Length: 246
Image 1 (cartoon, rainbow, N blue to C red):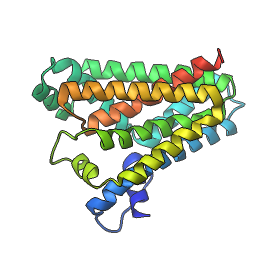
Image 2: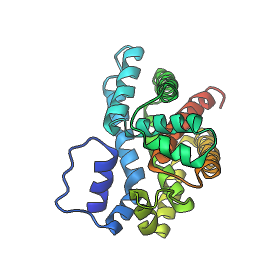
Image 3: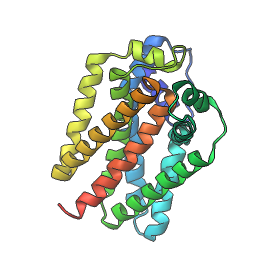
């Protein structure tokens, strides 16, 4: 349970207190539970949507988005803002890009990225609720948290002394691959729309991975957080759009 509690403590705002300092092996194993945390977040969003479905849609969509952000403590949004600032301000230079990511302040590009991502999420949530696709809310946090598993399995972690380097070294690779396959197959519940949503997820993820490698020769915690936010939004938007045509 320690690995699960590490993931729950890191990825959510739930008041989890670990009794002992986790080992590097336990930190690596915690990655296996990232999609499970996504399932928990998505399940809560779905439950709230069903419970409050009689509210005006504009209000309910706002509640769902705010709850989504609150459950994660804005952790991944912070990574998105830092990555956006660094990508624009880095001017293609690896060292400068990494230095800007470490700057705690948020620049105008970072703020703009947050506004855009939240606007896209809110509008897609609104349409999803309008179509009464409450169960679909479970899928997007799961897909977003499959991304760290794939990135840590396939990509070098740039900051050698960071937490991510330990995660990369001690992640159980075979178990991680099985978990990735299992959760991706769960999207078959939504039939063709689910399959195409997964394809958009994989396409976007590997595009982001390629860009990270080109710019900084790997990944950092900020780029992983940015990937989670971008992939949640892309898959949510893709699902909503495809639902009107399929």
